[in-house]
Image (cartoon, rainbow, N blue to C red; front, side, top):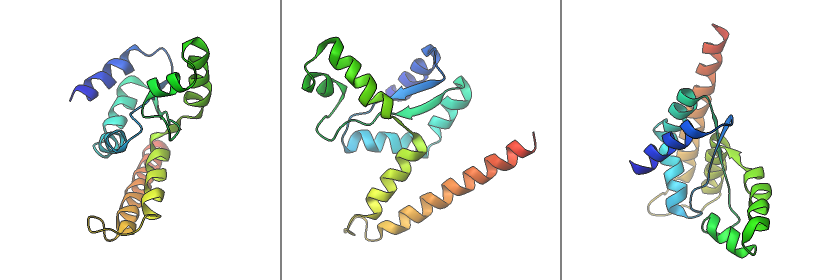
Length: 141
């Protein structure tokens, strides 16, 4: 609940057409993004505040933005490097979800997820349906 309220606050304060979100670079951060996407929370933020949401991807060796700054010597120069290398390479929520699906599709079946392709197929079908319905709505305008 706290993170959703913080997202609304951040969206309300942005002076840009973009809201850049940087979650921890671990399974909890990944799952938070996927949970917010699955519940259409990002769509609510987009509509309510007229912003495009971008996910900032960190290098594999950084758990959070603080790690990135520390690993790059700290200070203003490290902050500028973060802006260029991380924020500058941010991706849309749908790209994040698709990348996550591909990574899971390439994974080996496990006891918890014996058919990883089923989840990929279901999510891709949902995304295609959403895109088609948005196109129909826009064509009626």
